[in-house]
Every structure is written in structure tokens, then in C-alpha cells.
Length: 252
Image (tube, rainbow, N blue to C red):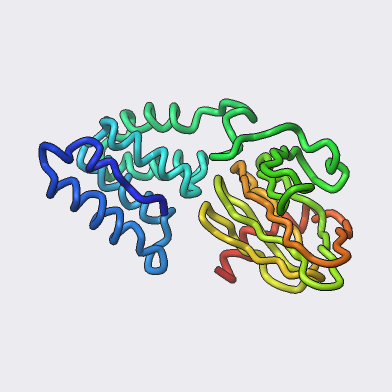
């Protein structure tokens, strides 16, 4: 989780102890306990508490934005607020919906791509993808290890593929924005969230892409190796993709 400095930025001179507790304890210790409760669920709990108390100021906007970054989709947020209306009050839900609409406004492809930017349509590899993807190269492969920000539109995924190498090789995925999937042949699917790191050894057949209602971005790191190559295989079928939610629920 990114280090929080909002308390010190706003209140360091006026209330330094409060700023310290906000940044170092609330966010530095409580929010960072991802092993006990994932960031996505912490966002949902926080939004529920704020709306229940009728707090619909800039703090709610901040936590709605954080929830989106932590993987709460637009469909999920609409359902959360609808459910909350019956428990936290109809006017509170109405106020929250106005802010949520702004946070989740679909700005098109240009609004996505995360911290490292959308880049250009990934036309060179379009034949190996189902759906639209975008590529933003971050380094020059002739000078250093190649890194690229890859962005998948909702439900977009690449084909099954294998990174081959005589020695070394493979790939790292550094998840930066949205919600995604990763799966190795013969294994259950893995849900991906911002901050997740996936290590893909050479020789392992796999695929990755976005979840159905969410854009997804990751940085792909090509690991150095000897005699490296990529083998593109069959697509992930629509039936296989549609079954992923149930598979993930049974194998969290």
C-alpha cells in the first residue's frame, strides 16, 4: 500500500499528533494489514461506515476513489449503495450515488492505464488477444530489461502462451490498476489486484487478462535469459472465461 501523507500535508503544523496517528497508525498499521483483511473489503467497510453516519463530503469521495483502485467495480459499488439505502437511509444513499457516479464515470480508454499510462492500441499482438488491449513501452529493450505497461479492457485476455528459455527467462507481472485474472495450465485461476506480483517461470503455460467488469493494467517485465522465445497457443474460450467467478469463489 502507498504510504499515506494526507494527515501531515493538511495538519502537520496545527495538529501534528493527529497527523501522525492518521498517517502512521490508521493507514500505516490498520489499512496495511492486508493479510487479515484485503484492501477491497477494507474499502467497502469504510464506505459503509461513512455513509451510515451521513458523511458525504470529500472524505467519501476519497474512499470511493480508493475503493475503485482497490478493485471494487462499478457494478459492485451500485449494488453496495443500493443495499445500504435500506440500512443507512435513502437520502444518504442518494448523496453517495452522486459522488460514486463521478468517481466511476466512464471516461473511455483514455481514463485507464493506471499510473504508467495507457499507451497505444496493441495492434502488433492483437491476434493473440480476445478483446482490446493497449501497450505502453517503458524501457528500451536494446539498452536494459524490457518493461511495458499492458492495459486490458473489461473481459480482455491474452491467449494461453509459454515463455521459453534455455536458461533463465520467464516473466514478472506487477499489477498496478483494476482487477485481473492469472491462470496456469492445470491450476485454479488467481484474482489479481493492484500491488500483486506474479512470477511466471519459463516453460509454464498460462494466460492473464482483465475481469469482466473492470479495466486492468500490469507492468510486464521480461526476465533475462538465454535463447528466449514466446509460444502463443489457443485462446481462452468464452465458456472458460465465464466460469472464472465460480472457480475463484471455490478456490480463493
